[in-house]
Image (cartoon, rainbow, N blue to C red; front, side, top):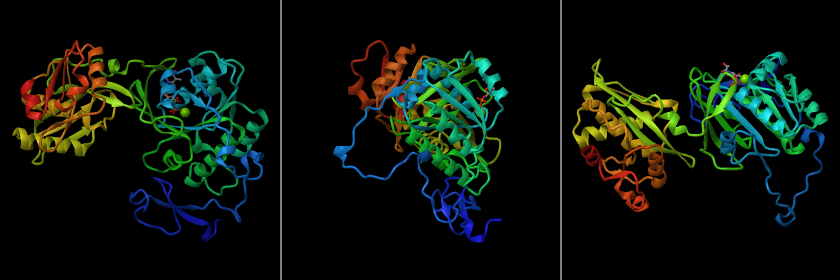
Length: 455
Ligand code: TYD
Ligand code: MG
């Protein structure tokens, strides 16, 4: 039984550690997330060396440090390489997070296959599934050679020693929530266990130059420590998003020490594993109801990549006294704000209507450039007049109803042109960057009223 002094409080959301209980986490400001747990520290802090190979600490001057060009290995999956910033950097620690069942194990097994085909030695360590379950998945994916070794264990000491003995080039740990570091006095999946285990894996990665992929389940209820608590420890954080029941998946980079973040990779789940979707605009627009009111295509930028997405709005008479608003894939407050702009600047009485907005394809838009598309979708649904399906619109909308400039306007227009759109509505302020684009009708709007009048 842990003594009182061994117990500390951890925030289930962000991992903040506190000696006393507090109702609101001082770090992430979430309420009721502090839970009592053993501190995980035993006696005097021991100096754990990097899997036993770290020598004396010797500070160097910058001149003495050699600049080694990061050597990148392709994963054989272009969509993943893009999110990683061009491939895997040797010795890096990569966290792949996502809901259970989204396809993390499948993706990493496919990476294992591609790496081993090029002669890289990979070890897949699972604490979740039995060897035969892994084999079953592998059989669905395809054929593997003997460079891939599979092990099922949850003891981190055991795993570290097997890595030290076999020295693979890459290791997959599936999942961090099942791993147990015996020197930590806490249950598997607890915040302290997950953090300490990641620390050990980091030392293995850096010390031995082994690339380590860590799978982490995102949990909404916070019963088990989510991957968020270890984001700051790893080099790269990728999140797998999408509807588990649907077939499309989006892999998003949220942190990357070796490349830009905000890149996304798009995948589709097939019978034999995940396939790449090289042209996401095409998939995001597939199955569109072209003559329905309330649907408008906008162009958003994810990382460096323009994407055409459909914004859907449904405005109908309110059912209760209070008008209902619902936003899926868009920020709720932004939607409310834009509807208030429509009330005030365009004179639409949306206070008598319920409104639902949705981004088709399960994408989440955070960019204000989608404002204009949303506004037009709401107007279209309110008036029950369909918008030309070959029209795309983007621009940030301000509180005065003005349409403001967006970044990378030319790329957005070119993407619309490439996807066969005939007209785009763009902010007037972006005129300069797009004046030379031919082959698509460009309508420049300086205000929301302008845009609505022009269509
Ligand atoms: P999985 O990779 O096990 O998800 P995670 O590791 O993120 O929990 O697989 C998720 C789902 O994908 C599972 O329900 C089965 C399905 N699946 C396919 O549709 N096709 C396949 O080829 C494979 C291997 C899995
Ligand atoms: Mg899995």
